[in-house]
Structures are given as structure tokens and as C-alpha cells.
Length: 401
Ligand SMILES: Cc1ncc(COP(=O)(O)O)c(C=O)c1O
Image (cartoon, rainbow, N blue to C red; front, side):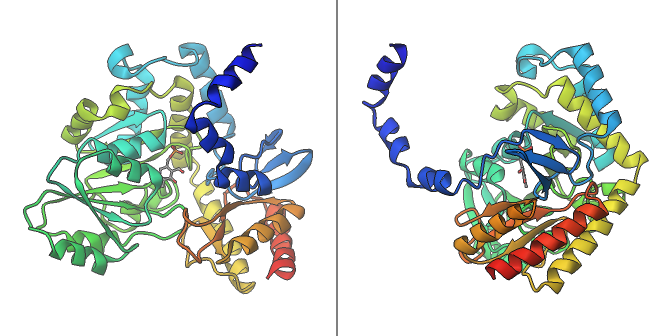
């Protein structure tokens, strides 16, 4: 009875009808390449409807999400703190685990201060939204992550896009603007879809004397690039020269959550003005403890980073030998550009047939003609995994291309 009444009312509004007829959702259901539910996971293996698959799309670059000491740290935090602090820190107080993780991350990133959020999306969004005011200009690489766009669209600053990873295009955008206008330069350190590293040194040269604050999303650089996994700025020798570094705890640190690091006054300003910080529940003790322990492990067991790069080298060489287009990726996030959504779909299906799970990205989430299979390699992939992955790719190339 209750369900009947609910249906009667919900059919009356246009939103219900819009959802019912939405073409993108129908297409997704027809081809169902997203929202699969795995019944089980063990390391790099997952089970989908009873079939065992190698996960080649996770961002667990160092394989720390099930490291024994990370799991122990999470269990202890659950015993000590319970499941959640059930509120924002301004409303409900912070906890010692917030302070501990923020101090550990600040030391690791070599920044004055860090703030952690319950998701990287919130951190990246607030890194932009909190600071942009009317009259400011945001200069943004057109390929940045949706979280940064959400921050950009929710503040009143003007926006100018520049071509992906192009200091020339950035300079051109700057040439139309007064030098004294307050500006923000927004980019990713290591691009999640393309596997490209930003030319940060050239960007910094371009903005010299231009009253520009820099915001770098290093979700995919942390734990992967630079000495000891300290990230893109360290990798490029520009540490200390980027104003704000934001990112996620859900990639190399194998947990869930996000962070922003920078000068103390900027983090304090963000704490005052960020809606995502003031009005959203804080990171849980379990998430914080797991991320903190993973950060400790990556520093005490550097072999996981070495293993990751060994796997990346083998995997990339193999893909290039097969003649596949990897969009010149230089990081563990390696796209296979197929340039056509049908090909991308069938290629992914062929990999699945041979027990390899990947994700498909089609326009508009990638530029037209760049439809791709997104893959990412992990330190956790074994030699046996890599052999099976190589066989699956040979099969998919033969079957689809
Ligand atoms: C570049 C980039 N920034 C931010 C995020 C958001 O991080 P989270 O998944 O922790 O919300 C992601 C996650 O996909 C990302 O790839």
C-alpha cells in the first residue's frame, strides 16, 4: 500500500519522468560496464558472479589496503573510537587521530600544515572553493578531475581553461590579464586518466610575477612519484614551491579520505571558509588509522614502491610491444586509447572473458576520439597476474582490433 502511494506521487513530478527516460542511464544498464558488485576480494583478485578476476583498475598502487599492519591499525581504531565521530569538527570536535594523521602527512609532504577530510573529493573541491573570490581569475588545465571543477563552479571567481599540460597555452591565457589580478592555477600533479605528469617547473616560470596561487591535486602522485613516494613536487624538484597540495587517501594509502597541505595560514583560512569542512562529517578513526599506518609502511617498506615501478615497466613495455596506444602515460595509471566507444566496450569484454577486470571511459569523461580502457598497475600484482594480464591483452587485440 505504502509503495503504491509513493509511486502515485513520484510519477507526478518531472524529475521522476526525467530519471525514467534518461538515455545515459538506459545505455549504462544495457551495457552494464559500471557498478559491478564483487562478492569477494583477496589481494589483486576479485570474484564477480562466481568468476575469479584480476583487478586491473584499482588505485591501490602499493597494495596497502589489506596490509596486515594497516588492518590491525583499523581494528584498534574501531575499538578505541567507534565507527564515526558523527559530525563536522566545528560541531562535534576533532579527535586525536585527526591531529596525528595531519602531523604525519605534513611531515611527509614537507608542508607546514595539513587538514584531512572524509573524501578526496571534498579536499580537492574545498582547495579551490574556499579561496576563490569575485574578481579573482582561475586558470585551470582543461583535463582536471571533477572534484576540482566542482570547487571551481561553486566559487564566484572567473575561469579560464588552458590546454592540457601546456605552459604555452597557460602563458597565452595570462597575457590577456592584468598582472596584479589575484589568480589561482589549478592542475593535477599526475593525471588519473592519462598518466601524464604536469610540467610544474614550466608552469611556475609562466606565472612568475603574476600574483598567482598554485593548487595541485596530487591524488595519483602521492606514494608513487618522488623520493620515498613524496609526490609530484618532489619528483620534479619543485617541493616547497606549490602553495597547496590536495589529494586522496584512497589511492596509495589504501584507505578512504582526503587531505590538503600548505602554509599554516592557508589551512586555517580553509578551516574558516570551506563549506565542505564546516558542514560535513569528519574522517572516521578507522579511515585515519589505516591511512596513517599505510603512510608509515610506505616509508619503512620502500620495496613496495620499487615493486610497483618494476611492474609498471614490464606492463607498459608489453602494451607498447602489442602496438597499443597508452597516451604516453608515464605513471602506473595506464590508459589504452581505442578511440571509439564500441571498440572500448568490446575490448573490455574480451579482457573480462580472460579474467581481467578494467574500466571503460568514454566521452564526455574523456575527449572525443580518446575513448579508452583505464588500467592501473599495482605493486600487488604478482608475476602470475602479469602473465595472465599479458595473455588477456593478446587475446583482446586479436579479437577486437
Ligand atoms: C585526481 C583525483 N582527485 C580527486 C579524487 C577524489 O578522491 P576520493 O576518491 O578520495 O574522493 C580522485 C578520485 O578519483 C582523483 O582521481
